[in-house]
Length: 191
Ligand SMILES: [Zn+2]
Ligand SMILES: [Zn+2]
Image (tube, rainbow, N blue to C red):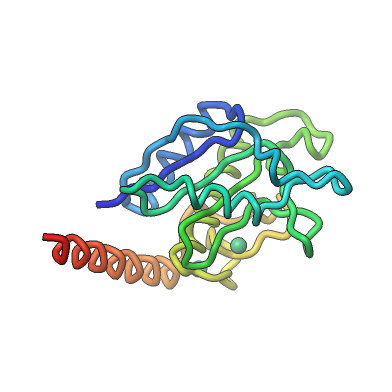
């Protein structure tokens, strides 16, 4: 079974990394490992916007996927954006191998509210699963409780659940079976 890798881009609170690792393992039923922390994604910085382009980060971390890697999830404290969106909680390549999430706007402090670690952990776990869900081919769901529904703001992140709705769960299960079969065949041919 291939592994989902987690990559901290800059210093990330280990409690958050571990909470995400546990959640990802449970939801995707795939072994999850944490890679050695790399530096802040300075290459993605845009001086005009004072934000970081998530798509550039995806490109960079895709190249860092270990040989036995199935997916790679970057976690960063920097604020992310795309050319057309003022901010993103995260981004992923649909049916791709990489995803990235930012903790900036998941923190209560960003909204001038007192810090809340529990809330932050829940939000980070949901966004990690959301973005990784896209890499497994899942698209935004209309069920507002489903973890892969689109969240325009942090309140809607709080409103949704940690897991997929039954339909998305089934789609994910089908996709995982496909991936395992493909990997099995690849191994078979190599022998
Ligand atoms: Zn999404
Ligand atoms: Zn759904």
